Length: 108
Image 1 (cartoon, helix red, strand yellow):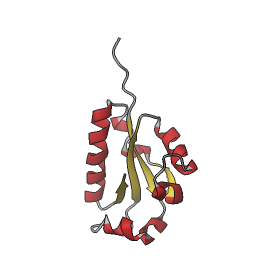
Image 2: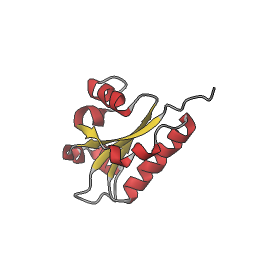
Image 3: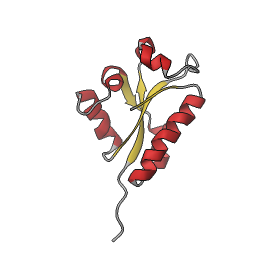
Image 4: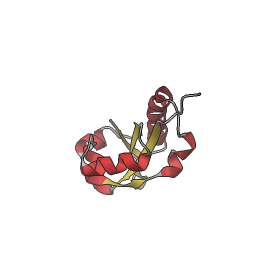
């Protein structure tokens, strides 16, 4: 029996308040005002479960806990699910692509 792929990349929209975070702005020198700010991650859980854990402070990124609004499935659903190594690569590639499109991006 083939091993079922269960890793996912996901994108969480962050509130505009994250733009007041110096580390976030330093990581996004080419941010285009008005474009979304997002967190890009990967997980072995379903993206909605992972989002809930972030918001509950469980193995969470501070920007998501404090500024996370909602998942943006239109930006990631087409890639999921996938093997672990593919998800790890896609997390980086998706973050780069969104940053090149002018988004404010944070990755762990």
